[in-house]
Amino acid sequence: MQPALEQPSVAAASAATGAHRFLIVRQRWRWGEWLAERGILLVSLSSILIILLIFAFVGREALPVALGRVNNARAQKPLTLTEAGELPADRLAGYLGVTVAELKSYDAETLKALIELKAEELQCIDNPDARRNTTSWRLMLWPHRWVGYDKAEYIWQPTSEIPKYNMVPLFIGSLKVTLVALVFAVPLGVAAALYVSQLAPVKVREVIKPTIELLAGIPSVVLGFFALIVLASIFQNLFHYSSRLNALVGGVALSLAVIPVIFTVAEDALTSVPRSYTEAALALGAAPWQVAWQVVLPAALPGVFAACVLGFGRAIGETMIVLMASGNASIVSASILDSCRTITATIAAELAEVVFGGPHYRVLFLLGAMLFAITFLTNLAGDLIVHRLKSRLQGAH
Image: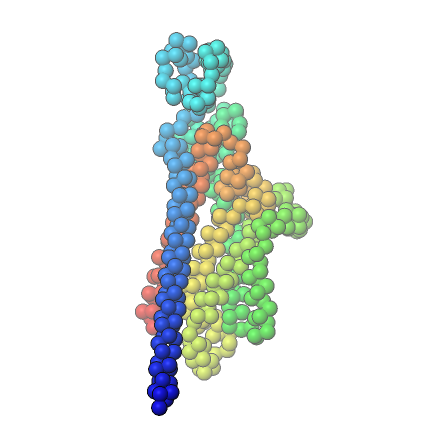
């Protein structure tokens, strides 16, 4: 009888051991989940912090010129050695065009020679434009009649004898290239998304969708090189214009980078439309293309509009394509057949060659801050319009 009595106790002990192991594994699993959640949260917060630090750095570098604290007027009153010796170190450094650290590293003889050379230089300046602060908002946004010009002009010439930092040609160039890109990218991207999501057979869809999405993986420099070598020659032979690189070439090349963004977002929005909409329309006798155009597309309009807004942000922020294909001429012109210069291309081409902390350096960071503000306001306006469209469609249903 003894062995019969021991069997239940052994089974109970085995069950208890199994339950204990299960509790240990479960507890470890919970700890693993907790660590994974905290890791994901830490990565997310770190990414947000890095973005905020980037914006803070750009704003800090652009703030002096934005607040009018930068003065690059060259024609100042020449100072004698006695007057220069009475100035504080920061003002004397600004007068000589050096940093405070560089000023402190000079000996007395070197400092005396620099002050005398500066006085001679200022006495030789007879250009009235040299007395102007070209980093002022008035000269950066409004036209001015410079010496040697017949009329007031918008000019971006940061490396000339009198640096000119008018931003209007850069904004016009960015706007022209972006609009040309959207004119090509929005119809093609939305039409392709509508065809793939609603009309294409399954086998065709499995080929077209990955092919278009693979365009997003092509490096921008490759698209820029393609536009520089191939598209520019083809368009010049077709339209016989004088400027080989212009807003048309840059915009068409830029549309190749924007189409995958618009296609992917628009296709997801069109696919998410309830199947009951299309089934009801087909049951009423509508053709498939009528269902796609008159039922599915209006129902997915908020998502399609969001795709266009994202495409605009992708286009206006692109650098390498427009740097290689737009011509980089800061011309104020409404024609897309003229060369142009964008904000992003200007920052990429000039930032590596400017003097750290100088007026040109500050103006380029101001351009970056303004580009961020334009993109942010555009996305904000697009988000508000999307929400309004959603509420209107939901109210209609």
